[in-house]
Length: 69
Length: 69
DNA sequence: TTGTAGACTACTGTCGACG
DNA sequence: CCGTCGACAGTAGTCTACA
Image 1 (cartoon, rainbow over the protein chains, first blue to last red):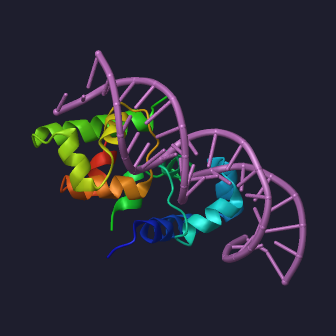
Image 2: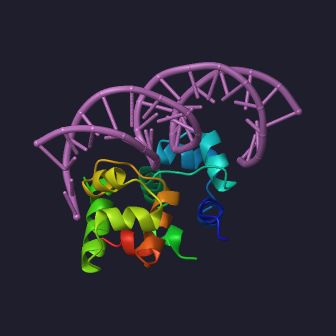
């Protein structure tokens, strides 16, 4: 059974790292809390689509990029 | 400024209708409440990715289908 | 730089009822 | 068949602090 939270978190981490951005910087760009970004990347949080949208914008990627498995 | 809740709700409604499925039936398939499906389709709720995942499975569509604008 | 913990508020998602 | 209301429990997202 695939865990969407884990899959999404891995995508965020991979894309963020590919751009050499820190969690702190991503949090600032997305207007979210740094500790929340940490939890998300570790598959611990069930994020809302508004949050997915904010993170996608912050990383300059279309939303679909985060759901291509 | 684009509202992701509204855009997502419209997608759900369009895909559901294209399959001739009622909100009640979709709710049953996705294991969600019917009144919540109604709110979602009307752009009133900021749904979580687990909910998006459930609805996608219920309508037999990949998650990305709901975020192609 | 990141993970985690705890405490907090606002909101998600449920449910019964009515038009 | 669908929209909305109101009450409710659980959780999203914030924030400070420590390793």
